[in-house]
Length: 212
Ligand SMILES: O=c1nc[nH]c2c1ncn2[C@H]1C[C@H](O)[C@@H](COP(=O)(O)OP(=O)(O)OP(=O)(O)O)O1
Ligand SMILES: [Mg+2]
Image (cartoon, rainbow, N blue to C red; front, side, top):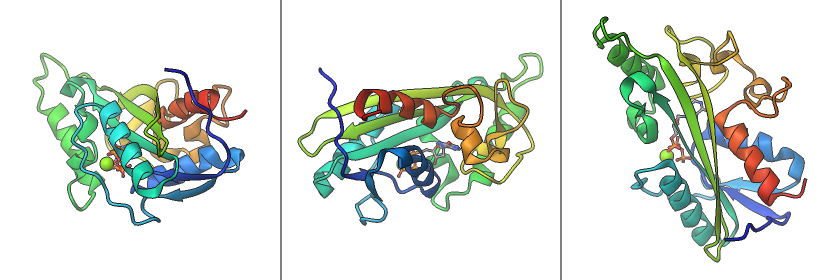
């Protein structure tokens, strides 16, 4: 299917996560959209019944585009730990429970890694995934995936980000995402074009769908 450009105008960020909404707003900033979020618009939070990041990103984007009548950009993301066979993965938000307790979710990861017998040695590599899906009210969608690989560190460090940021140290850096400003997390201050999973997916999205 051919790629469709997104014309300047109103755009819904189909998310209820403030950390994500803030980052996506920063990434969209240069393009001059009139951005609102699904949270601002009181749109229902769809049940994430998909078994992949792609399926959940599409379901959130399509639901918001249908409900708002506006192009809608959803992000489905998560943290995958190699030693835990990719968990929590698509269940990353759910591991934090209804109270969105990420201190607990980070502790759960560490406890599961520490429970792995020393002979095997826990594989502490991990990576974030973000899939961005843009949906138009007529049902057309475009999808982009970004990943960033690194290590799970313990104890958590830094309070600048959200979610699992304090326990993730990207390859080539000695600080966690929790210790980075959002400019650094996006990759804007380094010579890499994009660093975080979200910034990497966004870069593909902007090249395909936005006027650069
Ligand atoms: O850059 C990140 N830094 C730290 N943690 C992150 C990041 N990106 C995703 N994560 C974790 C936390 C989040 O809660 C979950 C995504 O779950 P996910 O269902 O995609 O988002 P969500 O339920 O929080 O909000 P919503 O679905 O309304 O967009 O993975
Ligand atoms: Mg969610």
